[in-house]
Structures are given as structure tokens and as C-alpha cells.
Image 1 (cartoon, helix red, strand yellow):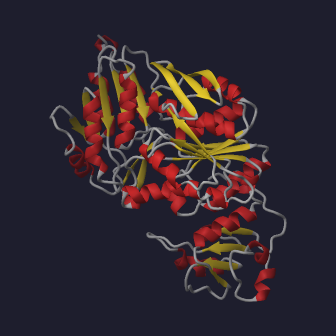
Image 2 (cartoon, helix red, strand yellow):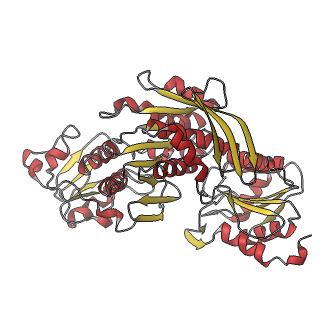
Image 3 (cartoon, one colour):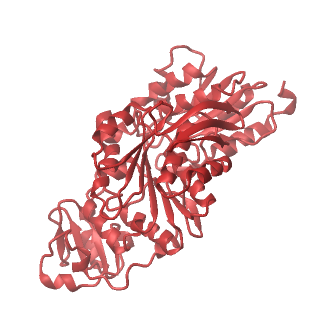
Length: 506
């Protein structure tokens, strides 16, 4: 995270007692008068006068770093259990993460109460939906920030994201930068990890959007039910907001979306979207081409013709969710629909690789069976001669989806090439063998080296074919044994297409 993002200014003087009112009981009265100059959960970033949060963790635990924080001048530590506090006050709470979220919001002056905030959750489509929301807001003159998987966009700042949803301290700081920099809205991706870990606790949402749910992150959540429950937290928490009456925007064409509606408290207004006749934001008469998509939108008693340069049915859903969100955020729907015609390319989301060839190539982030199937179905609607798909599965992640990815690719591709995709700490060939269990036939090829796999697909492509390179999308690295090596699917694919001899194009 850049230095510019860390420069949000808290309120001038904050006493520890005021900061923790209603959150924790202080160990002795005089602690309440201590002034706080900053908050952190990273002892490496500790400065004199900071409040330190010792967060529990599976790989590392904040309690191990309390004494280091004390030596660096921490005023106090907020923790869940017994810690060796190095002589500084230890303030015990039931959940250090929940307390940190509340304190962060207060420390930065509750920026989400000033901004119009949209939070997007789901398995697929979060990045694109959040991206569209930002574009629609900006286009109609409402400056909007973005926090998500692809980038952080703040006033005068645009940088690659370090994580989809930052820790609550960083998140509140970034929202404060937006507020102080004159932005009026914020579009956030909200991951299931972030919801379980209370990173968005104390945020006030105007719109909470659910895109869909399919298998992913089961290495963390364990079961689909637990994964669903994690996502549901964004919506079941809306009634606890103190300043805003947040609205739930739900894709009811998704079975988990329909299930979610039954979980949302009755006090929360629900806006549905989809192709069903009962959807409040309904798409019909959908038309696809290689240049974009058009559809009829029926919403708020009127009909609109929506044109978007984004390709595919899944992007119809992403656009519907975004249009519903900005309407909740106070933007006139007619103006939002007009703005949809100029949505810019979303990096790594069905991104066309520029090249003058008689075939096309796209790069997409699809790294779940459902996402890969959706992308391939969308490409089929363009009616190519053949689809050649390159994909892999990440190491140290949900192993159950590996054969499912193979089955999805095989079903909708004419040729499949399996390769490495961030093998991390696993042996690459071992991952590929698990992927291969999902193939029924023997027509696929295996290349451990990702660049070789991409070059092979480009080599095989004929007139009117489509090459899909799936899995990494906007990522510009390949992670192997704890090291990130430069690797950009778009650049590698473009290089392969440029180096292929013209005479080979039949």
C-alpha cells in the first residue's frame, strides 16, 4: 500500500477512553487519558503512541509480537486472551478483530457514513460489478473510489491491490482518503474471508450486492454451507447500521440468491435482479456479439435499452447488479443506463488481447468451475469456429475443484491445454495430475510451463477460432515456492500472437 494512502488524517486528539467507549473495559482509569497517535495490527509498522491490536491467526499470532510493540512505544494492546504485554496495559475483548473494526471506524471519523458505499460479494463477478459501479458513478459526476481485487482507486492514487478487501484499519483509512479527497462514493469488493474476519465491521453500506455462489475457497471455509454463511453476513448485518438503512440487491436467478432472501431480516429492503419475470431489475431480449451486448432493462416501471461493450450473459448480470446499486446510491437510472455504453475494459475479465490475426484471444480470471463454464458459454455465443482453452489450478488451494475445472473446460472447448497457475508450494505436475482426473477423453495436452502452453494454443489456432487463457486474469506474476515471478497472461499471449508467422494464418 502506497505512502499516499497511509496519509489519511484522524481527528486531532483522540483519548484511548473515548476510542474504546462501549467496546472494552479499561484495566485502570488513568489509561483512558492516554492519547492515541495511530492504530496498527502489524508490530513492524508500530510507532510511538500507537494502539496495537494482537490478532489471532493460524500462521502467525499477534500475541507473539506484543512485547515488540511495547518496545516500540505502543500505548496499549487490545487482545483476546492472556499476553505478555511488556508492562503496557492489556485490554481484553471477546474479539480483537471486531474491536479493531469499530475502533478503526471511530479513529478515522466514520468515513462510510459520509460516502455512498456499495459492497459487492459473491463467488464470481465481484470485480466487474464493483468496476461498473465506479464507472457509472464517475460518468454522471459523482467521484467514486474503488477497493477490490484488481486495483485501489483513490483521489490521485491508482495502484495494484494487495488484497481484495484490506484489514479494517487499512480499509477505513482508504475510505477516509476518499472522503477527504472529495470523493462522494466508494465501490468495494467484500470477500468471504473479510466477512469472517470482521474487516468490514462498522462500515455503513447503502447497497449490498450478491452476485452468485459456486464452489471456491473450501480450503478455508470447509463446506459450501459455511461459505454461504460467510457471504450472508454482509446482508444479515445491515440492520445493525446506525446511520444508514442499507438495501440488499440480490441475483435471484442464482439458487443461493433465492436462499439468501429467506435469511435477510424483514427490516432490510430487498431489490432483486435477473431474467425472471418477478425481478425488480429484469433483463430480456439479450443480444451478443464480439463487440458487446445489448438487452432490454425493465425497472422502476420503465423500459430501457442497455448497450455495453462487455461480452457475455454473466456480464448482463454484473451490469444489472451495478445499475440497481447506483440507483440505490441516488443516481438517476436513465443516466446510469447511458453511462453503461462506455464501460471500459475490465483488466483480466474477458479481456481481448490486441493483435491483428484471423483468430481472437481473450484472457479471463475464471478460476472456479462455474466461472470457467460461464466464460466459455459466453464465447460460444459469439459463434467461433473453435475454442482453445488454456487453464490451470492454483496450488495450496481448494483441491476438490481441480477435476471439476477440467470437466467444465472439456465440455465447452474444442481443445484444452492444462498448465500451471500459481503452483505456490505444491509440485506443479502433481496439481496437473489431479486436474486430469476430471477429463473423460484424451484430447487435452499438458504443459507445466505456462508460456509454453499459451504458445501451443496460439500455434494451433485457425481462422475464426478463439483462444481463452483462463485463471490469472489481471495478475502479473506466477507464484512458485513463495516467490512471485513476473508473468502477465495478456502480454505473454500478445507476444505469442505477434511472433507467430503471418504465413501460418490460413
